[in-house]
Image (cartoon, rainbow, N blue to C red; front, side, top):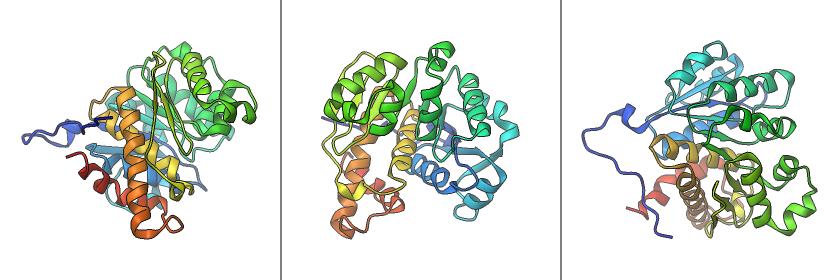
Length: 270
């Protein structure tokens, strides 16, 4: 497929390339918030605002100065100012996390939303939520076990026919589906299928999904439509993994390495 990066005009500023609000992380999973935030920036968005617990914010702030931080008490204001929301990465499925997720989804009724990881697990217990809010710009990024929960089927059923499962999720939740595997399948709301060909087993590492979710959110912030942002994000993420493998072997590629190779993958499209 002939992919192109979103254009960047010379007379631009950080606001031109969009604001991602990342509602992610929990007290013992701050790494997911860090990885998803950094990858959104690395793919080219202008701002990432991380809205999370004090413990997560302190942990992430110790690692980078590139992210803007906001307490959970500021969620309403942050949603009003955001172009895209990303949520679920390392969120946990505690009662507090579930309440936060449900509130965030309801508030984000007018902007695209990428839902990953624990957000998907919470959604599987509240399947009517997305149709109630009537936001037509959701991207769900499940791995096979999460897909099974979203549809209430067995893992064996998911693995036996991944394309049909991706279509079923898009139908049920009126969303773009990114069904992650060694050949990730992206399904549009109109049930168009894209099967990705980049990537390798170096990406079978904790944090890879957080990196991908952030990349997709960062592309949405740059005004890519949801299906294209999902396809391009999956392609570049896989390619970053391929390039990292060439230098580091498939054994030694960490999620942070995937982020470091995003720029190398982008270069192939310029």
